[in-house]
Image 1: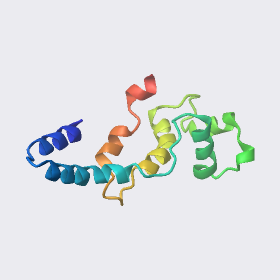
Image 2: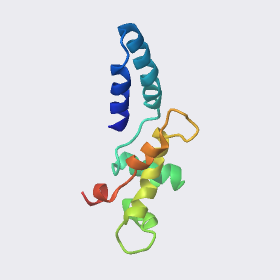
Image 3: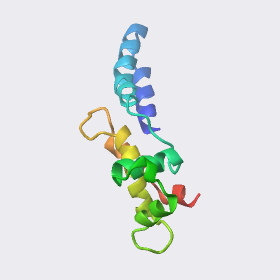
Image 4: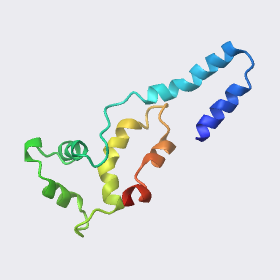
Amino acid sequence: MEKKFEKESRLRHIEKEEDREKERMKLDGPRVRHKKHDKVNHPMTKDQLEEVWEEQDHMRAEDWDPKTFFAMHDLNGDKQWDENELKVLFRKELDKVYDPNNRDDDMKERVEDGVSSEKIRS
């Protein structure tokens, strides 16, 4: 929201339409480049959980077992996932979208897109 306001404010002060369009392209460049990333799975879908199983847990796809997966990620053994246990599951998806080595990726935005208590409770 804040970025959008700053962009619009900046463009509003440019008188020539041609100059305004050049500035708009310059400002939109990082956003367009940021959107080019690997496919991101929707959180808590079977695809996302299986990807964690294979890539983070180094398990074979044919061995997929939801109960085993749950137990592996229930780090404190209380038979439910807490906020921190869920964050571990979502980290890989965020890493696809936000690369700390890419100057177009806003790492503050990555933190905001991370798991919040409101998202977990809903």
